Length: 180
Image 1 (cartoon, rainbow, N blue to C red):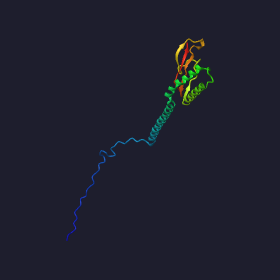
Image 2: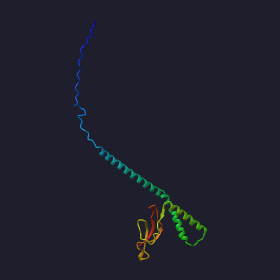
Image 3: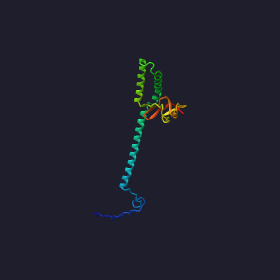
């Protein structure tokens, strides 16, 4: 009969874990920690700056769009100004010679309608410059003549072409004769 013989089992000892090895948590320098309040303040600051930048962009874009719409017809307006000038010169030369003529009245209506449409699109005729002081901001002196009187020196003696504005910008300077 066989006996149950048990062999002695060697006990294996657990190896000692070296906690001071590289890469262990105790060896690393502690990371600087930012408090939640500081982090929140920093994020709020970033958000406010981003929001302010976006608002500035939005306002600038809206302003540019409005300006573009106001001046979109600039070239067309400049091309039509000589036609208005021709109407003005024709009416000035005719005066009251043929008042009541239906053809003349028709031309006056066409001139008035064209001017109204252009005004509706942003064109503004400048006030007549005759007798006013010469202003380089709105007038262009095409010539100087001796002043007819002492009080007309430096003032506009005659307006050759009327000035026009498109919105708030000068589209065409008034062409004037200045007394000296």
